[in-house]
Image (cartoon, rainbow, N blue to C red; front, top):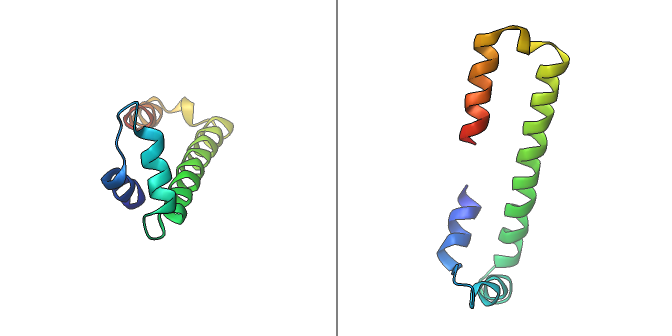
Length: 79
């Protein structure tokens, strides 16, 4: 979340300047390239852990407990 906030401070979402803002982050901002890669890899790791957690719940039969499963589905949709 911290890397996303830092990247959002330097990113513009306009269709004409989005690519140039990413290159600005990677080239001109101090350690911007490493923050961008930490953010991308951190997001990928988060979703990998999320899917592994869902798979574990299915493997161990957590869906047999409706209250636990429904809370998990609500949390999944909020992410």
